[in-house]
Length: 56
Length: 343
Image (tube, rainbow over all chains, first blue to last red; front, side):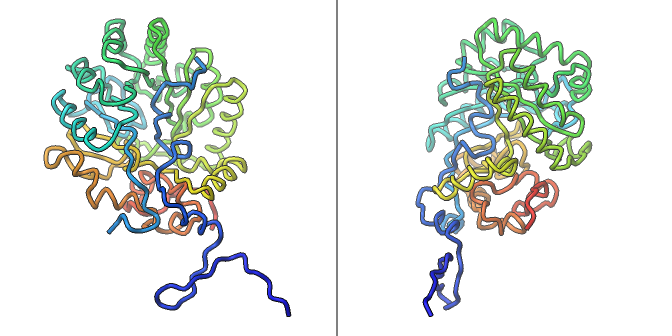
């Protein structure tokens, strides 16, 4: 019987237990930079500043 | 220890908000500071010390001076002078009832780049009711006219509560006619005086108001800034954008203690105006020491979140409002009780 590929990423932690992470989480954890994006953050500079990006 | 985990977000400190006084001439329902009672002030020297410490490790994008009502500070001009030059932009957050030509002239001298004014409804009676003082609405409109005459850009800030949750669309239309650069909206967090008057809004009512507001703002081409980490759950489009950003490795949501800090007149350092979790006091340590303390680092780690927020796949792009969680549960890592997501 042909094996189908799992969509989940399975790894083993130090205790030998399988840890299942979705590709969604795995993608996030592979990134090194962990700086808050002002586009998605609350109370960013855009909240307080009157700059309208050139709308005038 | 707090910085090792994958949920730790780097503290960049872009926005530093300085609450320079507890004095206020209004009695707003939702005031997070319960301002107007015992008077405390930050002095110009305090401002210099704080900003010297902050600028030793970061390039601030914005300093915003708030209160209470900041223009009631007896040394407001000196405060603005002290803050000048420490950030790319300098903003004043005022209720808009006290501005005069002379104050605006001094703002310009001190390099104030924009003013954020509070307006909670386009209906004068409702605004005055929420603000607790008759005539507040008309005074704010007079201030707006003065700002326009002097070419200072302004944002209208509104806090949605039970009384005005359905007012947002009309307020955006009104803001557009007034020439506002943008409307910035947040939800009432039950702290300060708001804890005494708090009346929980249903998510359905709140999200409908915001979604209607988004449509109107788009039609009018006016910016609408939603100050709420839960904004990603407003509609399919916002949710998909958040998921795409997360996959691209972006972090977002609650900025408390990450890209934002707030300093009270008694010199307590908070992560955010809506999050009354004291990280330290400037009398006891300098700002930099407080900012990089273990206590501060702990709130930057999304791996510590509990409950629904802890198990949510979107926690790195949201994290819930830590102020809301803390104010209702006394636990800084609890889930945001307002979150609409069903697990």
